[in-house]
Amino acid sequence: MPEGDAVFLTARRLDRGLAGQVLTASDFRWPSLATVDLSGSRVIGTGTHGKHLLTRLDHEGSLLTLHTHLKMEGVWRVVDRGRRWPRPAHEARVVLRTEGREAVGFALGIVELLPTADEQAVVGHLGPDLMDDDFDRDEALRRLLADPDRPLGEALLDQTVVAGIGTIYLAETCFLQGLHPLAPVRAVRDPARLLERAHQLLRAGVYHGRPTTTGDRRGGTWVYRRQRQSCQRCGSRVVAGEVGGRGRERTTYWCPSCQPEISL
Image 1 (tube, rainbow, N blue to C red):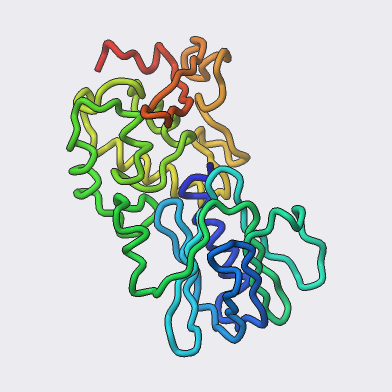
Image 2 (cartoon, rainbow, N blue to C red; image 1 turned 30 degrees about the horizontal axis):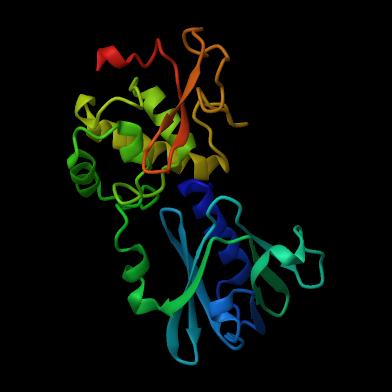
């Protein structure tokens, strides 16, 4: 599933193609919106909160928000009108057309249209957004520490605690802080520093256009998807394990030497 930095970059892509433009047509291939016609609407822009995309429009004097979520397989692509789409047409869920461009949302997991004034109904339950310039560190810390016995990795993946972290930045943030992802939250010596590190890593991902946690501008990770390979810091073998519960287990990665559970 794309993480906060990738979703933020998707919003930038949509803004480059649509912001300030008037839609000449729309095509919703989504049952609840099949009859909606947004032609004539002016696209104000696309914002994000964590992994959620919020495309705002001025439609006949009313402000509407197209709320989409990429889930595991979704992507938005912007192409010149008349150009071949990069994915099969049967995967398209939303098509927004302007005079010269088409923005196509493929395999989206959520598509809904609501008054912009009601956006909190779909994102208000989420924790502070790590991609936000005004990231609310105090509120994020309060939410993280609310359940001190919860496994750290599970808490960081919970979007109601802090929004934007997925499996890449979970693994990389914990590695760089020397924290075992399966240890309880109460074992974290400096949780504020942990959250600040995550904030920095996601912002760096936007700057470089990809997750770049090792300092290599071409991209690269310390432990993510490096199970059974040597740790680039100490040479120990990186391992993988499951984090999360209630049928929502996700794979994470750590170095048992750099992130010893007993040291926390």
